[in-house]
Length: 307
Image (cartoon, rainbow, N blue to C red):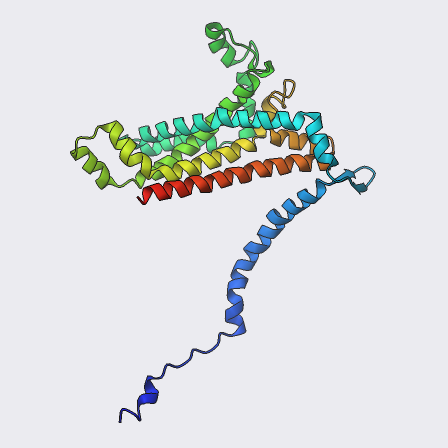
C-alpha cells in the first residue's frame, strides 16, 4: 500500500513562468530606468564628451580639442578660485546650520505644547522661493540704507557687506543658513521621535543628567541622521546659485563666485560649452567625494553601534 502511494509524495515541479510573468518586473522598473538614463546618465555622459570639444554655437561648428578646456579652465584661475569659494561657503553653512538645526529640534522636542506651530515656523524658509527671499535679503544688506547696516553698523562699524570682498560671501552664507536650519531641524525632529524612550528613562533612573542622557543615548541614536543631514547640506552648499546670482552676482571681484555660478557664466553667459562642462565635472567630482564620505561615516557608525 505504501509503495503504491509513493508517487503521491513525489514533489511536483512548478510550471515554468510564462513570458508575461518574466517581463512583468522589467515592465514595472522600465519607466524609472528610462527616466534615469534620459535625465541622469545621458546628461553626465554628454557633459563628459563636451568637455573635450570646443563649440561655436553661432557658427555651428565643433572640433575636438582634447584636454585644452581643462588646461584653460585652470590657467585662467577662476575655476580654482570658485573651488575655494565653494569650500569656504560649505565651511560657513554646513556646521552652523547643523548645530543650530539640532538646537532648534531639541528645543521644539522639549515643548509640551505648540510643537506643530514651531515646526511650521522653522520650515517656512525651506518652502519659500529662494530667489524671492534672496531679493529681500539683498535689500536688507544694502549699504548704508539696509536694515543690517542700521542695526549692526553702529555697533560693529561693519557696513556695505555685499560690496566688501571679505563680507560678500558671509552675507550669502547668512541666507544659506537661514534656509537650511529649518530643514535640518525637521530631520532631527524625526530622528528624536525614534530615540528609544526606555533607554532615556533607564539613564534618568540611573542618575544621568540631561547632558549625559543626550551624549550617551540621544546622540548615538541620531548619528545616521547627522551623517545624512551633513551630506545633504554639503551638496546643497556645493550647488549654491540662486542666492549668489541674486545678491552679489559672484562679486566683488569673484570673491563670492561659487562653482555653480561659474558653470552658468562659462556655459550660458559666454557660450563656452566646453569650459562650462569642465566646471560641471569638477562639481560632480565634489559630489561623489561627499557621497563616498557618507558611506564611510555611515559604515563606521553602524560598526560602532553594533558593538
